Amino acid sequence: MVGIGPGSKQGRTHQAETAIKQSDIVFGYKRYIELANDLLEGKEVVPSGMRQEVDRCLAALQKANSGNKVTILSSGDPGVYGMAGLVLELAHEKGFTFPIEIVAGVSAANAAAASLGAPLMCDYACISLSDLLVPWEQIRRRLEKVAEADLVVALYNPRSKKRVKQLAEAADIFRQHRSEQTPVGVATSVGTEEEHTIISTLASFLDLDIGMRSIVIIGNSTSKVYDDVFITQRGYNV
Amino acid sequence: MVGIGPGSKQGRTHQAETAIKQSDIVFGYKRYIELANDLLEGKEVVPSGMRQEVDRCLAALQKANSGNKVTILSSGDPGVYGMAGLVLELAHEKGFTFPIEIVAGVSAANAAAASLGAPLMCDYACISLSDLLVPWEQIRRRLEKVAEADLVVALYNPRSKKRVKQLAEAADIFRQHRSEQTPVGVATSVGTEEEHTIISTLASFLDLDIGMRSIVIIGNSTSKVYDDVFITQRGYNV
Image (tube, rainbow over all chains, first blue to last red):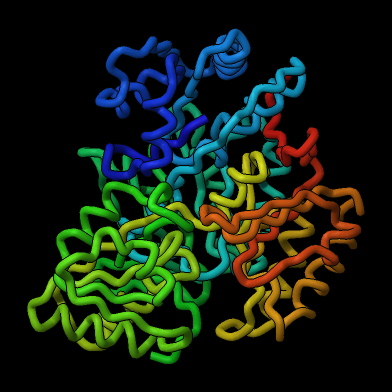
């Protein structure tokens, strides 16, 4: 279970590469397989489409149980909205006892933050706006508490072509607790050639081009924008 | 401004190594300098002790302003309780206009989570219990909101020899909102030879050996422990 960081080879750790090199069979979304292409020569590769998570993890576990060294690729960190939990849970259900290593990667929020400046410097929360696996009422309640707590928030899966109202509701919630001028950063396709970032405000960020490959970071009361850099202050006397 | 991940060479990304190799002068805590020793041959190295953050960052910025290529090393991710924000803020204050690159690394919470299983699978918050730079009342309020929101939390700087009451108060807050049997994972010195992890419960984790190199992860209502693996469920039908 290996996270290869966001985007390109540049974001991969040695640990991730070592794990991939040592495996016989590599599973993963087609896009993640492409990102690790330089490491896959001579290996059996099993690419898959979206929304086949349980089937893909089960197939990988069964291959491992037959004695193969198997990697399931994840972009970013497999332990954050990735497959790590599902793999461990399925292994438990099936009574598999072979060792499973989780290799952490740089998660999308951290990579997005670095491209925007340093908005996650102090305490922060990560919340996914996808209500496919978690009821929207629960996500909404989390957004409210995080907004009340003056925590910076990194929103994963903020908006898709079909799912637009969640981000608008999130913006409404934060506007009730924070100034309209609170900085909001949007980083899309971080680490790839298509990477683009923009810094806006709570008042107007909804108009930006935001999709499933975007991370939206909403600042708190100590967040600032200097020129094109988004920072959250931690309390040093400067 | 480069994050070298937690612990050892294994956690470093290509991007971090490229940035270090391209620099003439490397600043950082003594311990972080040691972690990157294999990359520092022929470079000017400026090690420093704890609590000289502003001076160290200013010295590094002045060297860069004189035309040197400078790296400030951070363990983990420099954008999470690291030096990235301070560096960007000081550069703005001083009117420096040379480019500053922030290189994200695997943050301690993500590395700790991978060693414990997959506790950060769904929404979560990172909160530092150090009240050196942030007033305790503000940290306390954030803990309360996060506890109410049923968010998993990763606690940075949970306890030191001199500072013990904050973690006890945090435990009290979470016990008011979550079952005593909620899983709590403690991972210490992750990525190093001294790494050790233990999984306990909200009722009894305070008795564990927890220090400044530990990360404490408190689960939520969907967290489970299977044998020695700590998982937070995301809602897949298994």
